[in-house]
Length: 244
Length: 336
Image (cartoon, rainbow over all chains, first blue to last red; front, top):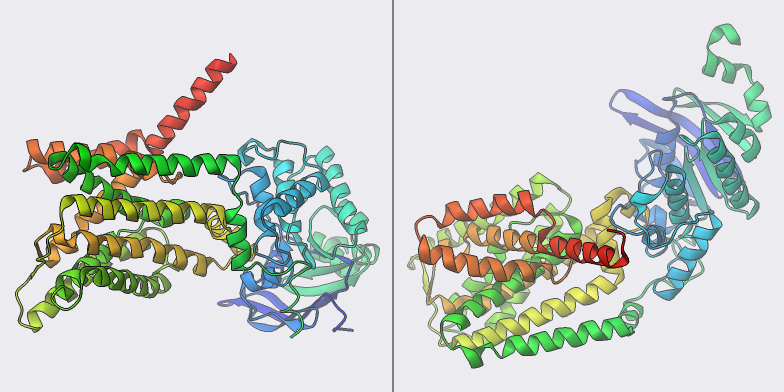
């Protein structure tokens, strides 16, 4: 079971001094699956994502990518093995053009291209995420959702085996949100393996095959979105005791 | 470990691929190369017109062009302000000064390049994980440290505090040597700009976190560029050593030199390969003027220049030129 998993997290903890941000988390992700990682603010979701992408090293436990233990590898190596991500607060490369921002993801990572081939691929990704601006324009002219599209296209440029989206839908207005959900839905239908950290419940319901719910760094529930959102402990974690 | 071998559907990037990609020249690249060669040929004719005053200024301009441009190769894209030019320049100078009785000049210049590169690898690996102001201070301290070590070494060996560099090289020959070196800096800088390495550096300069998550080995990229940059400083020091017939640590490792290089590069602009050149020429002329008219106030005026440049032309002369061109184009389009 574990060996066929695209990603398996096994007893992973992360301590910052006395604070246990992630506490013995275990879950796995099958190929072509979309997994939602949800939980109240401060429950350790982003830390968990940072552990998977290698931005942080786990204090204990193992993270495996298609069976290979990558817990001790630096972020660069994990990116090269096929994990790509977006960031909670969008990170543009301000002095690069839109096209270069996307191309940056496709040169040094998992799939590698250069020259005309890279250019063509980056352009095709811009179309795929629905960006309709001139590829040579500076990123400073982009709207917020378009910056998010560029970041997503950059992550896709490495043809990742596992795509990590850290609140990719946060901060979008209702119209943009519909568009954003459609973009991810499209990726999902193409068979991309995705971990989504998200607060927007509607999006989680429509996008995720399964959900893992975190509270205070630990897993409190796992199952289909419908199951976990009906779970008494999950409701208690989000809304407090009186509502359970 | 099956995972490490699978890097997607495409073969891993190879150096040969990079070289091949770099050799495919568009019409625009050909024009750039041709213009470069033409400018080089014109610059090489300077000794025909002057053998004395202007030639000696030409030597200074060529020297600072090499130093400021190679400095920019590393510091431009990464935004790491290195004040270590003097350390490497001094090493080159001392290798020639100390080695002349034992080996021919060209061999010593090569040794200086290799020694500078090796030292830069060590320094780079040790310091490039620190950033911002700490890196600046470290590199400034480095020149001072090397200077103290050299001075101490000379003291222990019981030699005088300096070295005589007794080699007769005409200003004309030195000018051509430095011009050749400058051409090499431009060629390498141009090739880097077209390579994956150059792209990696630009990404690192923008956001190192993104760079790491794009799969860039940031430490390696930075060290390579730092080494290239420092090697040129070392070779330059070696080449110009005969210009000073007597070198001592305070001349060879003068922190003043490091600052001059930074000021010239910033004055010109660090986001274009030719940027430093348009800083070096006016600054060298200005400097000639200042040291001739106000020999006692040079340091103060250097400081004043620095303030004025940073305050009024933060993007350098290149930025000014680009703004003007931009404005001109808009005026032509009838938008302005």
